[in-house]
Image (cartoon, rainbow, N blue to C red; front, side, top):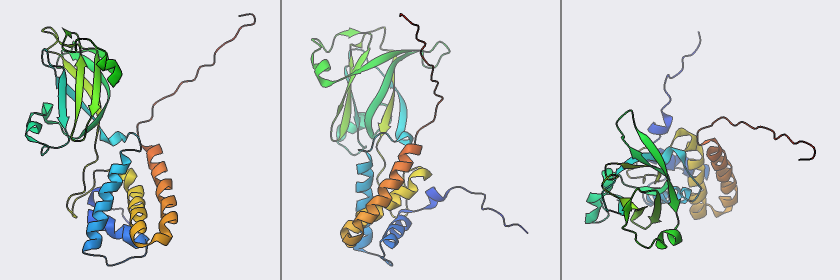
Length: 249
């Protein structure tokens, strides 16, 4: 009689923080950890997720938002969390933890079949600083993103006039990976990143508890992270058309 399968695929969401820590410690030869070691490992896992913010775009952390534009208003602030100052309560659309904006469009008639998008261009600080009147009104077609410690600031140019104030700035943004929190929590990761997360934590813990294993753990970690990053994203079709050359042209 054939054995049955579990019928589930939820290991990544039932793999709690305390189990992740235990697995990482076991990889460097330490068992039955508790107390300060657990606290130290949780801190290292949070630091690991911060380091992943420097590893390029993580596609599971891309969000989409329609920002309500206000006539004459140039700047819109998005705070890191609801606890970042009293002004955080006014974060547009109740969205927190934005790291950066990838691309944006000026969207009209959002909820209608006549919806229309116009591309907006992302500019750098020098370009935005060169605009002579940053409060001039018109049709917004450019934006500048300033990334600060506790929030990001999106400045649009020109500011919306009365005919554009009813439109939205539709944009895709990168969210920060959520903190670890309690030991019983799951992580804010897709299943593809579970192997490199555990390997990465083992590498971090080796630096503290088993220095002789650091190089080996680093190789495991970088190899598994590279595979996860290569698999991340959404594949699309690519068409290559050869160019035709004619003699004498």
